[in-house]
Image (tube, helix red, strand yellow):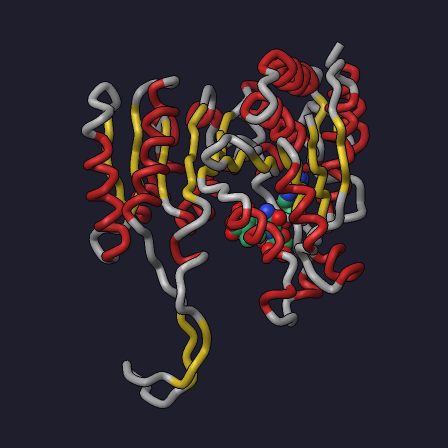
Length: 356
Ligand code: NAD
Ligand code: IPM
Ligand code: MN
């Protein structure tokens, strides 16, 4: 089993280090190979996703990814910006299905910004389409506006688009996932305004005919954003497009206590996957040793489950995380009164110890 380890930038290196230590403590034989990605790769090789890194990722059974990005690259031409690395990996590996499970661990009900009773027992699964939508639609760019309210003025544009097969396959992923849970799917769209998302809604409804045992409802994204903080436990599986999924999953992260708790799996048709926390490189806390490594450690558990067929090891890690939380150890992002504040490495140490 070969794992490509791509720590990236900012807190990426700090949190991936802890996940690698945890993986190394399991009695499993992996080959782990590390490569540069994002701003770090741009500095060393002049490109955020060098050919060698892409090759390593393609050949591996799974990719463990940290995060990329830093404000200092914001002025670079887009193709050289760190974020292009993760977008390029998703596109090149065909990672169209992004699972972002928002689980509020019992010990963290007081870390959430919502009332404990709203999040206690929360377990929802956001399934975000990851290789289409306005993220990848062409054309895009900047030009002199040919029409509109200000003809002749400078303008920028992107293209929101989905093809039928793209919607069909992510809808199937969602219905299949729901079959293993409470058999409910909420498809989130903006069909009242956008052609792309009327089409999305129509195709999801058609695919649903093959899954009569699963309940499907549709919700507009603005309402979904509101319902997520009003009554999050009403959701089970949420399926949506790339951009809405990006936004709603950060929102859902806060229901779990912190963005530092939200893992993710990005899978392609052959279940090869990239595993990363849902958060970014957090330049504001990078280098301080305070980042929460649990989203990354939990992403490693998802990797064992989905790509490496090691369910038992995955559960071992998840149980270790629960144990550490029960011991009252907290990085600052999930700290609440009466618990013990620890840093990134100490949190890694504690998970290692709890593995048994
Ligand atoms: P961010 O997720 O990096 O940070 C948002 C806030 O959450 C910050 O206050 C940060 O300190 C906090 N935070 C994030 N992860 C944390 C953790 N593990 N523990 C404790 N606190 C944590 O989002 P941002 O600030 O908008 O973006 C920073 C950079 O990351 C940008 O360059 C952005 O493009 C990039 N980014 C990359 C990815 C990725 O690599 N997949 C994802 C999101 C953002
Ligand atoms: C995420 C990030 C990425 C996205 C960026 C860094 C390209 O926000 O993984 O959620 O928008 O998909
Ligand atoms: Mn995001």
